[in-house]
Image (cartoon, rainbow, N blue to C red; front, side, top):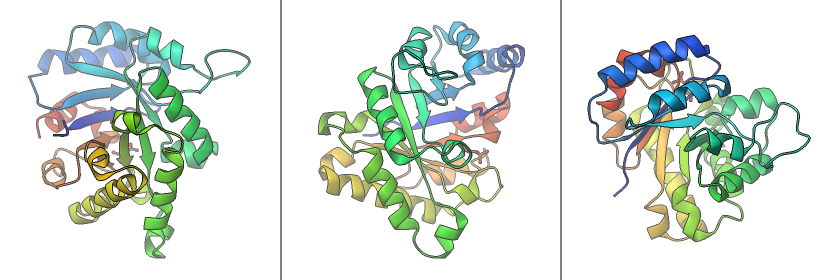
Length: 248
Ligand code: PGA
């Protein structure tokens, strides 16, 4: 059985002061849920968030990480730095990192392997652009991202990776993929992982959908056979809507 995982991706939002306000509201109103609840806050909020989430059921995540442990990498943040702050999850290869900051599959693969080695759960993001969807190459695009993302990962570590399928055209646009389209892609990703390893390994991998997920559409998405959770941007920035997502 795959435990559902709902992760908020705050992106570049919330100062430390705003983080305290939002997390206090979330923690005060949190009621027991049957999902892994995660918030991926900006680096500058991790320390405060770590204090506030200590002894709660909400897990802490970061939005990026470098693959080296220390050294001359100006502006980067290492896995040890994240571990030291109690970070349990890290989003890797988000389409905004790929598109705006030029991150490519081999860099992302190094980060995924590093996260596993440091016992931080990587949330590996994949997804196609609108052009790729419309020209019909979307399956190949996502297959390549999965094959490259999992390159060199031992079969025993595969289920430690969470995959997030996020069609780029659905991120922050209000356009959600239909539940069927989203599920078909998540199923396809599972097949690709099964080909690479074996079916029973792929069956244990949690695959999230992301892209304009909101309280109004989450229960239908979560009812699909191969969607095991959601990676949520905009709707995770408000305590009521984040809690509604957890209680879908
Ligand atoms: P969105 O973002 O929910 O605001 O569409 C999702 C994401 O980019 O992770």
